[in-house]
Image (cartoon, rainbow, N blue to C red; front, side, top):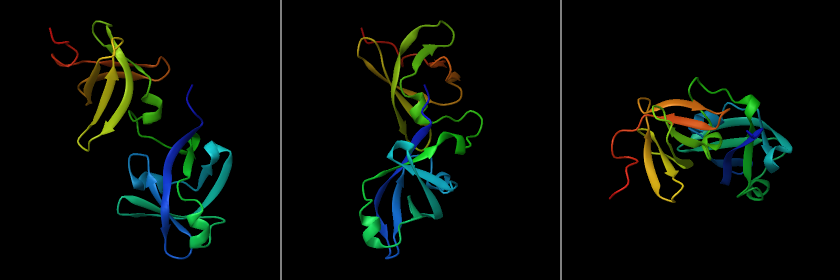
Length: 171
C-alpha cells in the first residue's frame, strides 16, 4: 500500500536569526521541495504552512508558520518533514523511491524473478537499483530507459531487460 505522506527532508539547522530552517531534501532536487505550500510533521499528522522556500546550495531554506526565531528553529533540528502525496505532481514515468523499494524485479522476456529492490542509489547520470535475490546475492542494476521495460506499482513489479552478465552468477 502506498503511503499518503512521504518523507520530504530533514531539518539540519537554521539560517539567520528569524527561524529560517535549513532542510536537507530527500527528493530528486531541492527545487522540487520548494513547490509545496503545506508540509507536515509527525508522519503527516501535524500540518505546517510554508511561508517561504528557496534553494541555497544543495539545501532548501524554509520559513514555516510558527517558527520566528533561531531558538525555535534549533528546537526542530533533526526532525523530518513530510509531504502529502496528493500535493506532489510527478512527470510521466517518474516514481517516488519510497514506492519502488520492495518491488519484485522480473525479466520482461522470460518472467524470471531476479529478486527484490532494496535500495536506489542516485548517481547523477542515472539511478542504480540494488537488488537482492532469494539466495541473498546482491546485484547492481542501472535504471536506464532501455533496460526498464515496465514499472507497475499496482502489481509491485518492475520488468527489466538486463544486459548479459548482470544477473549471471559466477560459476
